[in-house]
Image 1 (cartoon, rainbow, N blue to C red):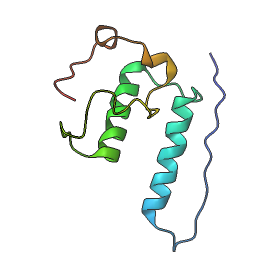
Image 2: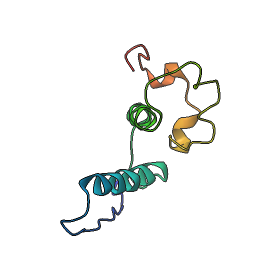
Image 3: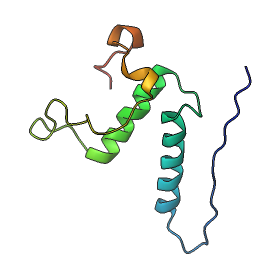
Length: 95
């Protein structure tokens, strides 16, 4: 099955910070995955979401990370949200 997708690139001058380019690229890829423009398996989606949460919030802190603290963040494609741990077949002790 052929899937048509597009990734947007911007070319910045040398003076622009590499961090800004990496951040923009990350946001474009994340948006494409969340909108199903780029297919990503449920297992890979969960792994990438864990990296995004780690980058945004840092290390796990039980005082800050109360149940539901990620409820307002869109970190998984809609098709992956309702899968159970057994359907994902992941060992969460390693994540």
